[in-house]
Length: 315
Image (cartoon, rainbow, N blue to C red):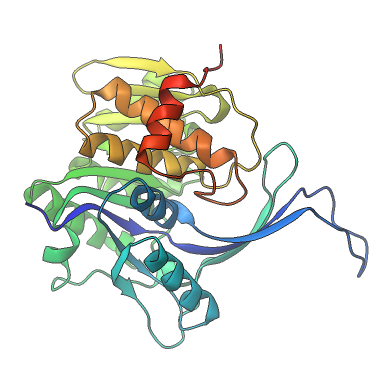
C-alpha cells in the first residue's frame, strides 16, 4: 500500500484576506471591513488542506521562507494533519504571500509575492517518498521556476511509474507558459486548469477544441473548471460531459479551483466514477466559495457528500 493517499506538490501561499472590499481609501485613509482572516492557499496548499479535511493522508511538497509567514504555513498544515516532510526552507527564501481583497460579489483583486514557490526543488533522493501515493497532484506548474525546468516532469514520470494517478493544475496567462507545462502532460491522467488558463495556453475558445489540444499533448483526461458555469470533462476515450455549478451564495472565490482539485482526488480515492468525481469536486469548490479564504467552507468528507446529494445546481 502507498504511504500516502495524496501528495500535493507546488504553490503554497500565506494569504491575508479581507471582506467586503469596496475601494482603496484615498491617501492614508482607512475604510472598515467586516471580516479579516488568514489562510494557506495556492494550487498546492489549498488542495492539501482540503484533502486532509476530507480524510486523505496527505503530504505537502513545496517551499516556504524562513520567516513568520513560513512558520504559520507549517503550523497550519500540521494543524490539519498534513505531513510537512516535503516542505523545504532555506536562508534568504521568502514565503509566497498574498493580500487578497474580496468584493461582495466574491471576486478578489490581490497583491502577490512569488517567493519560495520559485525556489524549491525535489531532489532525486526525495522522489521515492514524494511519489509514494495513490494520487499525486502538481499544483501551480508554470510558477515553480526551479521545478519547471524539467524536474516536475521527472517527478511526475516517477509518480506514474510507481502506480499513482496524477493530476495537474497550472498557473498560466499566455502561450509563452506552455513549454514548461507541456513537459508534464505526457504523465498526466487528469489535467485540470481553469478555462481561462487553458484558453490562454492554446488560443482556442470552444471547450471541446481546447480539451482536444491537451489530449493531443498526452493527457488522458481534461477537466476544465468554468467558474460559475460549472466544469467540462473530456477524455481520450471520447467521453465528454458538462456539469453545472451548485447554486450557493458566494462569499469568496479564492481557492475554488484548487479546492476542486482536492475534491476530485478525494473522489478518486473513494473509487467514484468520472461524472461523480466531477460532481464531488464541484461540491468541494462550492463549499469553498461559501467562506472567506481557501478551504473555509470545507468541513469533512461526509458533509461534502451530503452537500453534493442535496444541494441544487444552477440551470
